[in-house]
Each structure stands twice: as C-alpha cells, then as structure tokens.
Length: 255
Image (cartoon, rainbow, N blue to C red; front, top):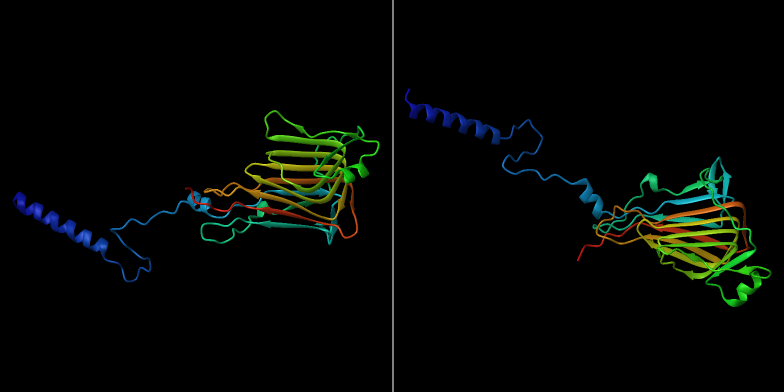
C-alpha cells in the first residue's frame, strides 16, 4: 500500500466517523445539533434582569401578638411586601429569606438606649400639634452626621407627622414615646436602613411606612431594611391604622 492510498483510507474513515456523529439516533429523544454550540444561560445575568427582592422587614415587641401559636401583627397594622418588576414585565416572587420577620420579643442583640432627658423632637408637625405635646419638654433637633448619610432622632418624645422623606442612607429613631400622626414615611435606595426603637408607640390617624429599592439595570440588590421595635406598649387611637410596604427594584435598561 503506497502512501497516497493510506491517506485516502484515513480520510474515508474520518469522513464516516464525522457523518455518524451528525446522524441522530432515532431512539435518542435529546435534540442534537452537532454543528451549533448550545448557549449556556448565565444565572447571574438572569438574576440581574428579574425584579428585585423587597427589603428585610423586622417587627418586634408589643406591636406583635401571639395568636394561634404564631406571632401576628396587631390587626390595625398590615404589611405588604412585593417583588420588583423584571425585564419580562412580571413581578418577581419573594424568596423565603425576604419574608417579613415578626416576633413578640425584641432581638436579644438589640441594645438601643432610649433618651430620658425630657426632650422632644418634632418632624413634619405643625406648631399647634407640637405645642400640645411639648409642654415641659426641651425641644431638640435631629443629629445629622458629618458624612451626610446618617441621621439620629433621639429624644424622650418623638413626633412624626405627615409626609417624611429623609434623604439619608441610615435613619435611627430612638424614643421613650414615639407618636405617629398621619405619618407617610418613605425611604428608597440601596443598602439603606431605617430603625424605629421605642418603649411606647402611639398611633394617630392613617400612617404608612414605605421602603423601595432603587430601580436599576441590576436588580440583585434588595430594598432598604426596615425595623420597628416596641419594647413595652402599643397605643393606637380608635380608627387609627398603619401600613408597612416594601418593594423590590424594577429592572431599568441602562441608557
């Protein structure tokens, strides 16, 4: 056998092998396209375009009741947690790790210190409302950190009224007596935190707390964290109520 004949035989064998690789076995149910590489889905890329998760909601203390062997919010308080809207237009389902957390007891790690200096801070309240609650109390102002991303509202009495939209990443409200009067508080962004800590929570009128994740082209970031701790007593006036809303990020294509 000369060299040319040997090369022809090798070529025929390779051609037959290649042809058999391209022929689909009729007993094989798997679709087969040997000349086209199957695209691999990137889980991170998919997650980026789905709607985002709502932020953590942590409610504890006297505002939570033990009913039917499980913690439940006082009937005058409701929670709405929603996933953001993804590229498909569908709302993202909420992962179990982002479900609201309720407890009749305060977190053992909670170490908040409540002021006892007979002071009052009012945010959004008119002078008449402020006057009714500020008798014999020293008026204080919120403390804004030099970093311009943190604000502390620390007083023995804190009044929050009407529309409140703090442009801070971290908001901490500490009061022996926290009074909400038709408050509509909202915070939006990424990695934001709002914490309300009080011994006595007084609720007047219709109140709402909203946390909203920023709308981005990457929705893997959850919404702001919201914590409400009531150590001793929940005092809602007749007819009053509060809604707590957390919404995940909506996918927005980068321009």
